[in-house]
Each structure stands twice: as structure tokens, then as C-alpha cells.
Length: 270
Image (cartoon, rainbow, N blue to C red; front, side):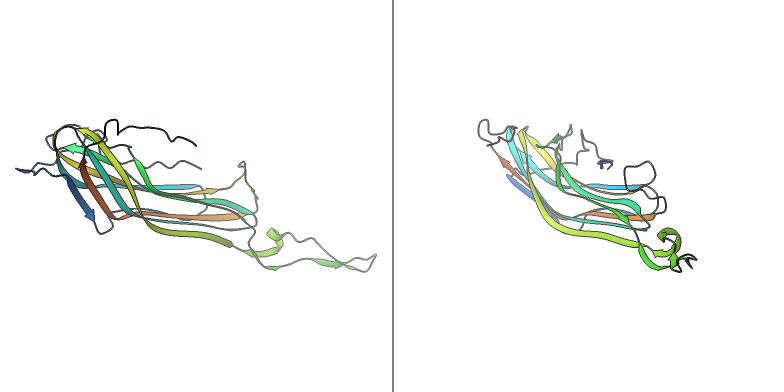
């Protein structure tokens, strides 16, 4: 299955344009912003494809909080979001047709501190975080629904018995498509903490950059592939994906970490 990569197109990774500072930004230890309606949605749809097909969509946007930081302080950032994922896959066919339908949805976030006086942005640790992701794949080999068959029969002159020819379903029968499908629709709230250590004095815009990604793919089995290929079979597949970010909350707190209290480490197995 092809890998799915969603890029945050149109947003600089190294720096953001600084927002004009107000005449006086009060010193504070906490800030929060939130949204109350859906802000991003990525949607793709492939319907009844009879050949290999792939569609990808991604959307990127951000929420913003502003805080004034004294010298050598840390910022503890919390981001929460409701993520909705809809994945639907279906395969229909007859006479041994085989296909795979894949629906892939995801939502992830990266947090940056952008100095209002200008300069490069700083990415908060631990970097990009996947808030929610689902890959749904449906593979089916379908024989179809037999409606009726015709067969030739004749009397054997030696035995006097009625002998009928073997039935070849693809040739002697009326077969209609058989179909199977799977739909999943979930919405859940997710939270993750970020940290910005040893910040220089100044006023910062804290930007939580959200990205949604949707991918739909159809793989029709044909000759030469490692699948149950039947040259008499016919098959079509559909894949639909939707990834939505609904309500969000961004909180920023000015803190002072303990000595050696901020460090990257590996999980220690027991």
C-alpha cells in the first residue's frame, strides 16, 4: 500500500511573518484561545473505479495566542482538539473479480513561537504530533449472485440416460454484482503538551498549526499481480475519506523548569 504523506503547504517551517505588536503588551503568566466550530476539513472520494486510482487532499491552518515572556523562562503549551474521521470502503464485482479499497484519514499539529519583533520561529518540543489517524483497507474477491443458468442436455443413445454438459458460470449463467462495504465514523477529543525552553525576553505569538489529510486509493487486481486474478471476473471499488478538526483549545503558561528538568530521553523498558 502506497504511503500517505500530507504536507503543510503554504506555511513556512523556519519562520512565520510576525504580527504587529500593540503599543503595550502586559506581562502575564497565562494565555488561552479557543475555537467553537469546524475549522479544517479534508475530503476525497473515489466512486466505482474499475482501474487503479489515488486521490489526496490536505488542509492547513492555525490558532494563535500571545504572551509576554521575561528572560530565560519556559513556556508550557497545551493543545486540545476534537478530531472527526470518516472512512468508507466498498468493493463490488462478480465471477472472481478482486480489488482493494483503502481510506486513510489523519490530523496532526506542530507548535511554534513567533517573536513579534521579528526573527525566526522556534518549534516547540517534541515537534510534530499525530493527534489521530486511521487507515482502513478492504480486500475482496467476489463471485457474484447467480440469477439463472442454462445448460444443454441430451439422451445418451447407449444408456438411455439424460446427460447434461458441465455448467460454466461465467458463460452459462446470469450473474449480478455482489457488494461488500465498511464505514467508520468517529469523533474524539485529543490533547498533547508542548514545551519551549529558555525563551528570550519578548512578546511571542504561539501558533498551533493544524493539518488534516485525506487519501483514497483503489487497487484493481489484474494479470501479473499477486492476487486471486480471474480473467472472467469484473470488479469496481469505492473509497471515501473525510478528516475534520472541530473545536480546539490552545493554552500557554509561563513556567520555570527545575534544574535539568527539560531533556529528551528514551522510554526505559522494565
